[in-house]
Image (cartoon, rainbow, N blue to C red):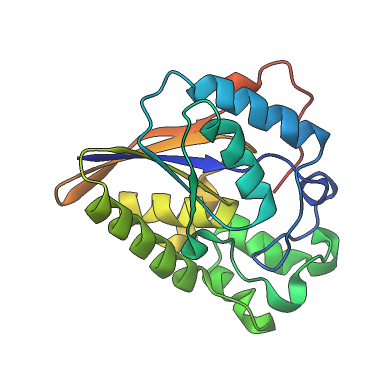
Length: 210
């Protein structure tokens, strides 16, 4: 039975300013994001963690580092954990996309085609590669606690896979910056046991959006 702790990276300036930040944007944590990562590391320092995997992007690596130093663990890179490829929409402000981006958040049928239409990935493709990565980690680390540091759409697609719900329902969930989520892979029925824990961020300045 593997326990997978899914951690979203801390805040970047693009999170704060509501610019689209996909897998092609190697943005860094801002001052709030670094503080969030430090709180996150403290929050998980008593957890028995066997291995830490991270998306190779800087914002996730820096978040993972704040956890790893409490456990004397090296961070293992997993490219399949990168954020959705937004292609031509990388760096665009949310206001430039208008209603089409909102479709992802309100569950319209074509929601997972937004980035694909601009040369990027669909949510279906993200779910396929992300869940494939989780299955490989489960096989490689049975009976261990694995931290996975990743991104908004990747983590939500994994949660949809665990709950066996369509991606059009992704709008039903929100996960904050530096949030902790947890799944248990026990035989054929995976379970979601923790969602969007941000209790460790109490008294930090309010977070911006995705």
